Image 1: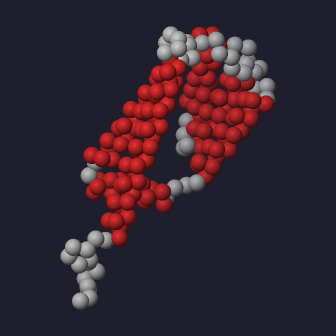
Image 2: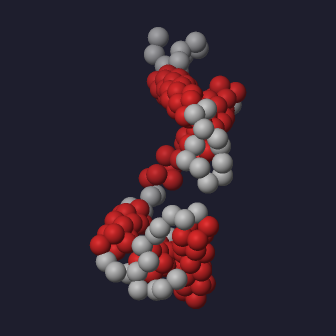
Length: 182
């Protein structure tokens, strides 16, 4: 008996539904793998922290904080994959795929070039951290669509100076000074 309405027969499962179920299963596996990796790293961070004190400026605290965040995010992702109804996941996937079709690749490519240029300027020029970061911020803001150059310049200069002073004066971690004597 032929199906003329374009609808699958009663009891039949569409290929799209099978593919979606497979993707949902893959998302759960991904969540489990990321959670397992986070737990292994957390165990290592805890073992490292037991060797000495956890001080705010010590090298043992921050790996522990980062891996705790990793485990929390992985657990939340896995829980979302298990609890969220399949229909909602399918709608979100369709929205993402529709957005991906409209993606303008010039922006990510421009940001990649700007980031590589930034790393080269910081490492191999005399500009230093503050100037290189300020320039990178302004360029990145423009690439991402900002048209307020004044605001971008103020933020692009202020934030790197605060970060530079925080690292060099408070944390005693050197950053490239460059031509600006701070």
